[in-house]
Image (cartoon, rainbow, N blue to C red; front, side, top):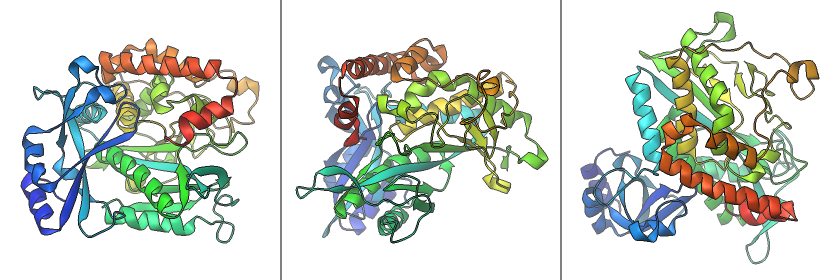
Length: 439
């Protein structure tokens, strides 16, 4: 909508804005915010707004607790679901130290750096997420239950699908906020839904992902429901994925090609780089213990492999033409911090281009039913958070992209989480207490 501070301030003045939310993302993908009054905004643009970083998990200790939020003018959006009179707007912010230098654990800054490297190499990366979630009924106190909104299945319609009006409201709300949705439908699980929004540059796409989750939860709550992005709410039903569609352009031309025309060498190296690094970055794509219940069933991958159109693969090349030609990474889930996830995925692909990595042959088989003679030759994704931590801890690549400070802090928390899970007698209760309400 607006791209400069002066334009933003004029919009605030002319549109009866009474509250300004300054949003950011913590290390683990949870959105935080602080509200300021409109007359504080000029100072926020120039000097930032301080907050207690020691109270944000994974940020700072009490000895160095001050960090500053600087709103990004380009991210201004009105929150349509907030009641009037007086509008509420939101910005996403860059996080800086008191001396004005970037905060090393600001994952939005990390994604910016990778995007700048991509552009310096002569490429533009576009990302389009496909995100799934479950809708649950609430009790008389407004607390979430484990009863899903409906018992519908894939692409069902009303009356089996009771979520169509909720999805419609979500899509209209996102449209008001400048986010164009492309498709929405009932997914395979009972009460499970999917909404896909149009691809964009990596930073905007990560911002949109945060907005999407907040809108889904807000609209669900307004309708007396609860939305959960927990990766695997039910052991015997499909998990919720965050499929990441990626295309790469050079000189305005998409370097991906469909099967009939073959692939460009650059596109193949980009895919090969992502395949090669996925095991060690899985901790950040699938960051909670519950994430690993999802792999290997209901169209979630288990092996490091790729193919055309095949939904049993880690990477598939969807049937598409023209600007929509792309690759799809199918392992991530909605618990991921989108800035960190997109940064690591992009960096892996760019490394593949830099090293001219060769793409292994396609695995044109259904890997859920394939014989051991096929699956036995493939590398598996990590089978638990503990295994993913071990792989990330040994990765020089992860430290190069995300920084030593961030990785060290992230690993500390995730080791504690994995240990707590191992000690829990009731795994289902652990999942519900740790993830169901939060993610």
